[in-house]
Length: 253
Image: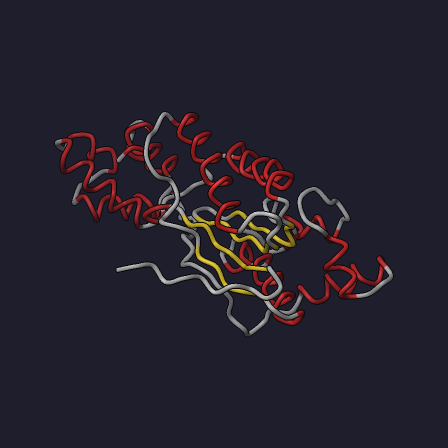
């Protein structure tokens, strides 16, 4: 069945989401998130896109982006291929990392632009990772609130709030204190699971007494169970730590 053509934004602005394949965690360590942000910066010059917001979550990425000289599809292929090459090299793995192609929605008016921006920044709050947006390291929120511009074009958005920069930031922060009832493009986030909960998941799926007993299973059954465990939201690091199975094996199952 042919893929449905993407709707073209009249403004060139899109809210897009890139997801890990099979709900896989795509940012295992701090270095991984840093590398992805470096990749965004690298291709800004080549593809000439503009980013208004971003948020890196455990198994997916939100970006509010305006097309430049290249199409969004071409730019995302560059970004994805570059990061996957690095990720596979680092973790000694092969194959796909992202699920199919990215998903996106058009942003064609000021109201929805700000709604999508706030929705993206609120992801860590919804996932229960932080209680204050200032505390989340992997979103563009602090680039605005602290005027610490690295990746996003803060001028364009802040000028929508007020021409005076101090007042604009105050209004920007107040705007983010209210949760919008309007839903935006999203995926089902994988919640970070406590070790005690993760151990119960492993034991129930594998029907074993102790989480490390999975090592005693034959390879076919072990790999089948690891896939099911990963789909429940456990990270590679957590599975390896709780089962004693090497990260290399868990990553490549």
